[in-house]
Image (cartoon, rainbow, N blue to C red):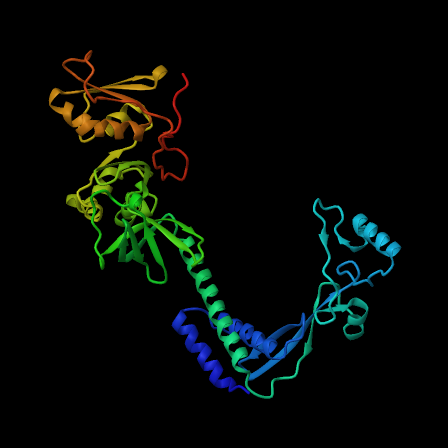
Length: 426
């Protein structure tokens, strides 16, 4: 009926083309042949299994029967014919004793399946064949091999089963591979752009970057090869859907991990990051090793490392600041690129007064108050920037109210970083 050697070669070729294991293709082919056999020689309720032995070049078909007893299946009863019989049977059905129920203590009792001799075998009969068999075991009974090729309908069924099984295998493989990459960087080529959403070819799979996850002002073109932050892997009817982002704060964090070996090795740690994508990012770093300057490590020789990160996000400004457990030092660092003359911490109000030279005032506040706003989000403190020469006067745009509901990205794994989601209750 079959040229097993040719079939084995086709299986190996298919496995190589799809980049999946040979064993998985064999399982798909076995399932397909079993479906074709059942279609051609179908008996109601029969369970057919196929076994392909590539080493012995053998193909066998089996009927599968599950070992049961009266606690796992119910048996069909004769229908009553008289009125009294109908009444008594109705009452019996309504009462539904636990004799025909499985696990009667369950809140929602499950009706046992009806005994079918084509797929079930009673325990006493099974023990005559195999003494140590127990309820729930499966027993295989040889079926006669087809004397000729399957018919057209059966062959079509086999083809559909193989395609379906292969799609399932590919979906599972893609999901498994990319779930491990969630929260990291992936590279891909822009395939198409529809209504602001960018569809990306990632090799074995496709991803989508919605408009809200793109960098404002950035224009992607078909054929561009870009890096993306893999937000999540979601289930969909067509398989796993990979959600991508270039505006997420952790996109910058991952780029630094890629460019700065000290971060990848854990010598330098990213304590927190705040970003207004396309405009400005503030990233706080600390050293876990004496003698290592965390800011210098991230900037690189002649700014090479930060330039490499910046080239991936266009004209976005990146401020790398040193993290400090001392709030006044941390706040002073956070208003970079401005230099603070002094910082006064008001713990009871969870507020920091930052005094800067007059020529640094506009730099500390930033355009539209952006610099002080990001500094407040990064540190978790309300920041009030004032002129050193006129400390009593509030500056327009110089006060940033920190709101605990606004969440900053925190990539620290040891839990020591500043928690921007909590405000002082003092």
